[in-house]
Length: 210
Image 1 (spheres, rainbow, N blue to C red):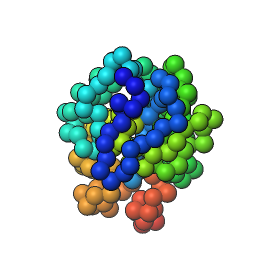
Image 2 (image 1 turned 90 degrees about the horizontal axis):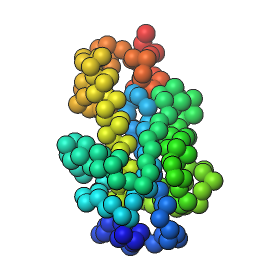
Image 3 (image 1 turned 60 degrees about the vertical axis):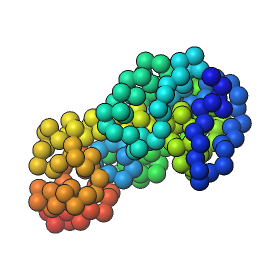
Image 4 (image 1 turned 120 degrees about the vertical axis):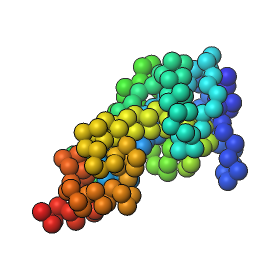
């Protein structure tokens, strides 16, 4: 399957033009920039032309069950994949923008075989030595980026479910750490946890009350 067959038609954007024609193109995406707690998680995926995967689209458009099924297929069929993260402490130390790019670089560097070219969701490349291009709405425009978004989403959601088992009063399994009304109410009632991002304003406000 040629790279052009991995393109996803998007009505709001022109057809994606890629300055690479080989087989070691890695899609890169992240999940977890907005939550108040936990790591930001990134994934990098090199799809295998010999083992196509149907149904790869932006992870946010899939049900949890479908994401998990595709996660298994990606791990079984991809030429290479890697999931990495930057911790809440790194988010606080670096800021969320730089921590997100750190997680992306870690995922890229963990690929075996290594990538030759990067397609990164968003409008900025993560300062990696490899050539590549940033793609706005990339998880809706290219299957490799969509695959990365699925791996990252499944991994981070699993972290939130695990955290929910330790602290059920916060509702992490439902809101996944995002600043929903439920999360903010629990934060006010019970205070920040060690895993909360102290640099984020709602957490800062609660810490100031302690």
